[in-house]
Length: 275
Ligand SMILES: NC(=O)c1ccc[n+]([C@@H]2O[C@H](COP(=O)([O-])OP(=O)(O)OC[C@H]3O[C@@H](n4cnc5c(N)ncnc54)[C@H](OP(=O)(O)O)[C@@H]3O)[C@@H](O)[C@H]2O)c1
Image (cartoon, rainbow, N blue to C red; front, top):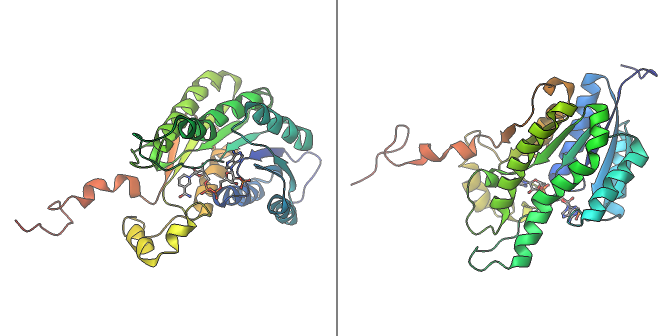
C-alpha cells in the first residue's frame, strides 16, 4: 500500500537492537508495519555507537523504513533517560518501547558478589522501569505500548545463573504493575519470555553438536528458537491487533517450559522404568 500524508506513523525504540533477538524484533516490526499499512521509524539502541549499529541502521533503511541509531549504557539511569530523549529527537513521540537488552551473569548465589547481583538487576529489570518512566508521557500521547523481554528463567529457577532468574521474574512483575498503573493513560505493558533462542549470547553452546541435539530433544516443537520467533510475538504485542492486551506474559519457547511432567519416568508416553 503506497504511503499517503495520512498514513499513520509508528516509532519504536528497541534496546539491544544489534543483538540476536533485537535484530529479529526490528525486522519483525517492519513486517508487521507493512501488513498493517503504517509508516515506521525504528530507533535502534546499542550500548555504544560503532560499525555494528551503523550497519544495522543501513539494513533497516534498505527495507524502506526510517531508522536511526542511538547509544547508551542502560545500567546508568541518566543514560536511560538520554536514550529515550535521543530517540524522540530523531523519530518523534514513541509508539512502542521494546526493552530487549539484557544478559545473564553466571554464578552460584552463595558466592555471587553484590556488584554482580546489582549489575544483573540493573541491566535486566531496573533499566525497563527507567526507560518506561522516561517514555511515559510520549506513550500516553500516542496510546503506545511497552514490551519487555524476560525469559523462561524468570518463570522457573535457573540454578547457577546468578541473579538472572530473580531479575527476570522482577521484570515480569514490574511490567504487570506498570500495566495496572498506566492503563488509565492508554499505555499497554507486556512481557515476552523466550525459551532457548540461538543468538550471539548462546551461540557458543550451539556450536557443540551434542549440546545442540540434547537441547532440541527437550523442545516439544522439535527445534531451537530463532530471533524471528520472538520478534513476531513482540511485533504483534506492539501492534493495534493487541489493543486489548496488557499486563500479560507471552511465553515463546516451543513448549519447553511446560515440558517437565512429560519427562517423569513411568508417566504415560514415557518408557516404563525398570524396578
Ligand atoms: N538467547 C536466548 O536464548 C534468550 C533466552 C531468554 C531470554 N533472552 C533475553 O533476550 C534478550 C536479548 O538476548 P540476545 O540473546 O539477543 O542477546 P545478545 O545477542 O547478547 O544481545 C544483547 C544486547 O543487549 C545489549 N546490551 C547489553 N548490555 C547493555 C547495556 N549495559 N546497555 C545497553 N545495551 C546493552 C547489547 O548491546 P551491545 O552489543 O551494544 O553491548 C546487545 O545488543 C536479553 O534480555 C536476554 O536476557 C535471551
